[in-house]
Length: 150
Image (cartoon, rainbow, N blue to C red):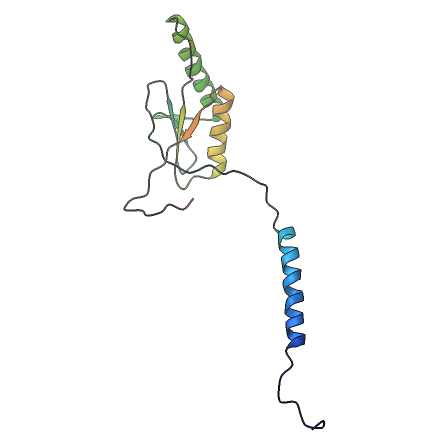
């Protein structure tokens, strides 16, 4: 019987190799995946409150910037217009003897096809003009949406 061929496959080396590979993957995966621990905000949609002092800016798909309905030629013109609007708001409140608790908001409506650099330029200009609150106006998806992907 000692010279008879083996009828069974010896799986011990295969199991040993698989266990070694499993241990290697368990050790290397946490090292490869490095993330910064963040607490991400919950996404929710709120209705915008429209008040006369709020500023509405629009960025077209060609990159043109509109203050209300008026087209701005460049970012410097936009900054001057925003800064003068903010100054007049503060002066009116001081003339009435009111204390300013909140500054006006800037609502930016960007076309879906606009390049990010154009919207980024508008955000930078708004910040340089002295505004603190900047909001993006978007259109909710049409139809019955079960779950939104963000």
